[in-house]
Amino acid sequence: MQIRYVTRCTIEEWNPSEEGYFFLNHMPNGTQVIQIVNLQNVLLDAKLCSTGVQFVNSLSVDSSPKLGIVIIPATCTIETLIMYKTGVRNIHFEKNRAIKSVTIRNSPITNIPATLLTLPAIQHILLEYTKIASIDLSWFYPLRGLATLKLVKSNLQVVHGEGSTNVTTGLNVINLSYNSLRTLNLNGFAPFAELTQLVLTHNKLESLTGTLNIPALTGLMLNHNRLKQLDACQWNDTQRLEGITLAHNYLRQVPACLERFASLAHIDLNHNRIGYVRWEDLQQLPKLASIDLSFNRITAIPPDQAQYPSLLKQLVLYGNPIEVVTIPDGLNDTIHVTVV
Image 1 (cartoon, rainbow, N blue to C red):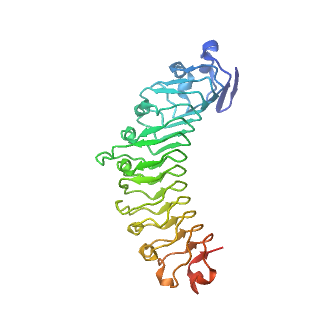
Image 2 (cartoon, rainbow, N blue to C red; image 1 turned 90 degrees about the vertical axis):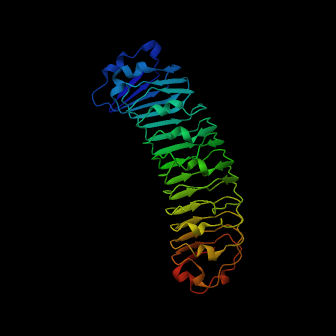
Image 3 (tube, rainbow, N blue to C red; image 1 turned 135 degrees about the horizontal axis):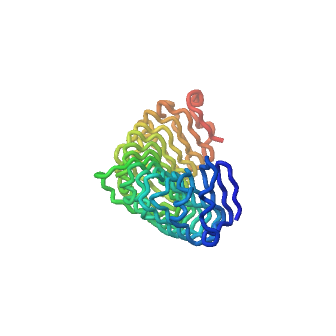
């Protein structure tokens, strides 16, 4: 076993079954972070927090493939728990009022730990490179202080959610990117009334069902999916929505009813199959400042500058079969148009 101290205490090759916990009671004053590297044990249990560890701010367990089970007791006062490159399949939290952030990365864990619900102070959850295949959004309703939920680069295929608006949470960001979602019911996000960012990029989404009903939403990210069409006509008016990204999909037209979102300022539709744009619809967006339509199948754009949204400043069209001469005279004086 090797031990290195500063404000961070790094413990390498530790086997608690053989070497015990005694040394943890003799850490220097001011130790804020404990990092355990290559733990030589299957179990990390409550004994850890009966030592000086209970007084540090952060506990990190790295590069420990032998570790399979973690138990965090109520007595631990750590605020941040990080598990990186471990063999952890089971984490059990006792009711703990100190923990604010939990990160599990590169782990074979297959289910979201149900005992996360016993952490009333939790603010941030990050699960990355896991084997988790499903998530029930209703599990997170009781966590009123949760601000960010990220389940990314995993095996996520199914998202469940009740969709009841009788329950509201303070969650601000949900990121489910880099997964294997093929379809998604937007109703499940309705209880997250304070959600500002919904990130669903780099999935295999072919369809979105239900109604988008998130009044605080400012950004919706759907790029790098397999959407062939998107109809926003059944979505509730999300008056704060400022940006929507749909790049790298299979869309043949600009999604219907985007003009209903009065705050929409940025639309990204590059790398789709759009051949025609209803500019009269986009013209109804009073704050639209930029739209990226590069690498589509557009052959012409309106000849009259008055047909464009009044605040449009950037129109990106390169990669389309448009002749430069079709760009109206003077358009580049007010709108930066890029065609090559």
